Image (tube, rainbow, N blue to C red):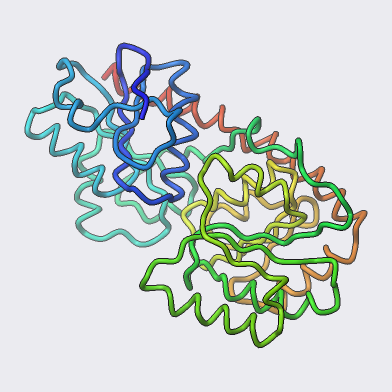
Length: 341
């Protein structure tokens, strides 16, 4: 892990999880961009080499001066508060909420101790125990772009990326694909993500559905890829689907749109209602409504001109309101306000 960063260090963004997750992706994309304007480093494992990074043990040896600790997980929040309470570091603790689930008493207690709380959308803000600033997630429009995509008419792929488990609704998409693919031989499905051991039964059930439909060669299920390779995987798609029943934000949909890939996603989940413009860059359907998902898939698959128009609208919508630069700049404003208090 490299250790280059801008001095002085004003902000620390902890990442206390080895496995790839949406939070890890957020830190990996935001911190390098923010480091161009403010002294910020990440700390913890599982981050790409280009992220300005400081070993966690070195945080304790830093010169004592006011800094912002920007946590995005409960364990990171607790660590920041402990460093502050024990006077091991002089910190303003900031927490970003990216979960729509009702908060536990423990989390509510920790949040009340924060100097600032940020939510990524109104759904996340509604479950917090205090008022929040709203800062939507953004996408790096230079990295996630249609440039270099596969435009051959012979290659048509429906994709879905992220954890494979029941709350992600992966089985809903697979059942829908098993209905639409038999009469559309030029289309295939590509599902990519990690499956935890406790969710292996769910993956086994999905594979059984595919096997019974005789579509083993047309619906691929593969393990997650490194963050740096994800833009290329999006560019290979003709359509992206997020069938999630629960999301904090749903960044993969924004990444797909930025890549010029129209998206179909569940309504009332994460930020999908804010990201999807019905009939322009994609469609929404109720969580678990496989019939409605089949209807949208069929319509998009069977109308090439419409799909091409949606692809253009997808990129345009991302460029207009899903910029990572806008997210980075707003967070830097908050950091600077905290450092002045």
